Length: 166
View 1 (cartoon, rainbow, N blue to C red):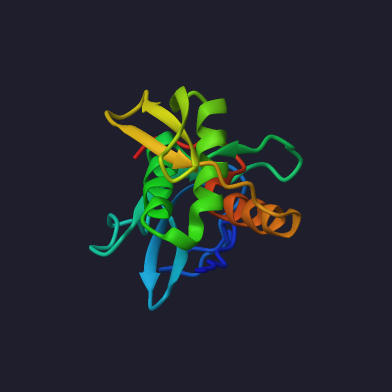
View 2 (cartoon, rainbow, N blue to C red; view 1 turned 135 degrees about the horizontal axis):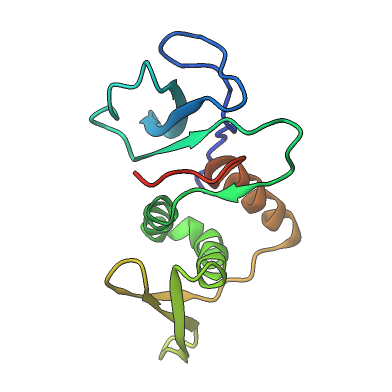
């Protein structure tokens, strides 16, 4: 299994090391570094575009620490992450959880559930934000794995403010 330990916004510009304050616009990028995925945050002033090897990027605003509002990364970012999970057989449970989250957020629609010749039940999802269908094995994670997936999703896909699309 591949585990990514990616933190929330460090509230510090990766390029200038300037502290990011509430209300500052910034850009976040996920880049591969060896077998890990690293999150880097850049102030609007230091942003020169995503690196060539970027997996994805998005723009957001540093939230007011007094605010309790938490929102998800843009739909395209979530779909990109989901499609990466689908490529890793060890991440089927995480892909299943993200699929359910995307159904709830109306990024995809569940069209059907089917049982294959192999006896495995699969959800049939239709992309609403992108073309394409997905067949996702129903893999119920263990309680411990649910906590791990929740932490991964929180650190990768949640921001404290409504982000702008890429």
